[in-house]
Image (cartoon, rainbow, N blue to C red):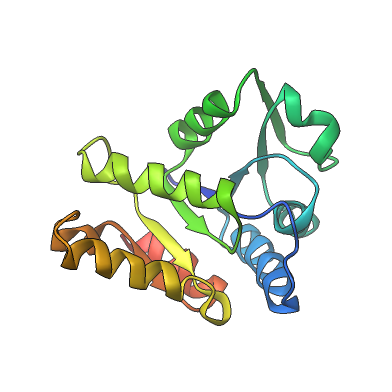
Amino acid sequence: MSTKPTICVYCGSSPGTNPAYLAAAETLGKALAGRECRLIYGAGDLGLMGATARSALAHGGEVIGVIPDVLMNIEGLTQNLTTLIRTETMHERKKVMFANADAFIVLPGGPGTLDETIETLTWHQLGMHKKPLTLLNVEGYWDKLLVLFDHFVDQGFMKPGFKDYYNVAQTPHAAIESCLSS
């Protein structure tokens, strides 16, 4: 990793129903700034995405937002981003975020967050990268996904070594540490 690592955060454009998710996003943004990590994320100002970015910016962090044109009017943009990268498609957005990240932290989210996470893990499985990915398991949010991963392994659709492609952390600080120490 460079002297100033860039951590990509995958997360929901909704705050979810549990206030702990929003609190974790805000803590993560502050902690990334405090650890002098760049944040790269989907540029939206809604939900956990916006909360993470606004918190990082409020604490002096560097924030890179990547957004496809189609989402500009839907998600809005976090104000005062350090860098804004506009893309034509969602696929291009994922590619840009991936290419510019040294590591990944996954907060709670829905289908889009899951898509980004699974694709990043699949690319690791295929040997396309060795960048660390940490699931920030706020109040057990990712527990059922972890059970599903175990099921995939048990049923022979993933090798047992798949578990080596990700870490699980319970707090934002532990998630950052997991990324920086991998």
